[in-house]
Image (cartoon, rainbow, N blue to C red):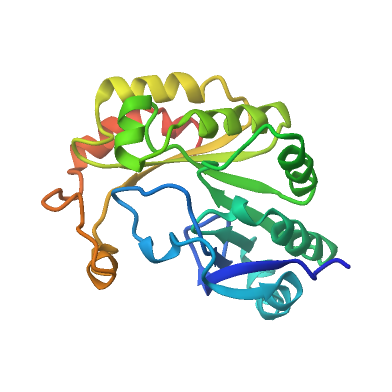
Length: 249
């Protein structure tokens, strides 16, 4: 029965404005394979925790905000953690959304993407009810990506190719971190990769911030980017130029 799939939800936000078009209802899923040094939601990492909720329950909570979505061109975004760890839940939730005429977005890095037949079968079903994917490419350099996140970037880049082959609209996001992701050569290589994806509708540079540091401390974790500040304006401008964001946005 559609809507019965269970996901582990970390939290929800009723009025998100930066995670897709318009005003969004944001569902943060619990669990992630990556351990990004700059993560501002480390409390979403642990797999197997969070609150078990059915897709129907989350849909009923979200749909009361439809008036705001319709007025702003918004809808529902599922973020994380890593949403793709909850494929059955996403398929059910987004199926209900499409039946109600709601715009659907996934905010993912694709780190758990797999070409296994079982995974692809579910992804194909999910894409059929997904309007937009916001894809976070954290570092195009494989060695630097592993250092930054503990995981390889190959599945993420392969996910981008899968989305290209399915002509799935995507927004590319890149967090700009001084000394970690602001090397001009890396940004040039990232731009070269993005230019192979005709399905990219927008490219966004997200300046690094430290608003999530308190969560690391609350969890008793050592913050690995201690002492690194937000990038200065000229560096942000350089990144935007090298990634050609103006031609998309």
